[in-house]
Image 1 (spheres, rainbow, N blue to C red):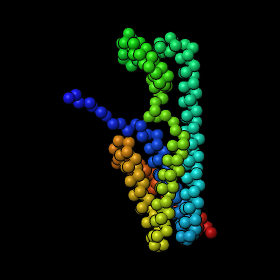
Image 2: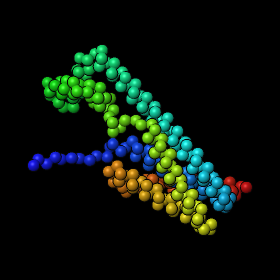
Image 3: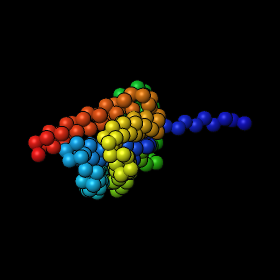
Image 4: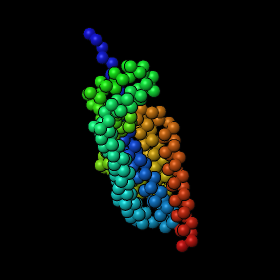
Length: 231
């Protein structure tokens, strides 16, 4: 029996994975930093929780809107390029054959064979062939605004909920170090999980995410102490 070799790649995950990791990362960093800043300024748990909840709601909406607008712009650009290509295929089919042939020749295919490949692919799906090989648009990286917006909002809320829960139950004398350490561990875990889901090494992304989270929390804590001392 002939064995069929199959390969699994992670590139088809990049669209939603980027939005999800970015959303959760922002949720943890922004909410933990906001809570630490308020606690360091006022020392009050209630004020910090109110600020954290407000930050969760506003941040989730902002992430969803930002992703939707950004990815919609990408989708508009892709659709315009596909419309132009569709028109050229209808009005200049021979030129499009030569264009696709030239692409394959530049990739190392012998000219006669390159033209045969171009003709065969265009006889099957001309727009798909040009979208993939000329424009670089495939189903794996095709822009999906709604998917990106929903993933960002959900993951931001999930990330933001963690420091809020910690702030609700941590002993008040230990609330700041508890939030800080917990947030860094969560960020490192998130970075590692995102890298693992994408098939990449996990250590460097985990350290990278934790570093920027520590920087953000240190900055807001310092600002809180500065304004708290002034008041």
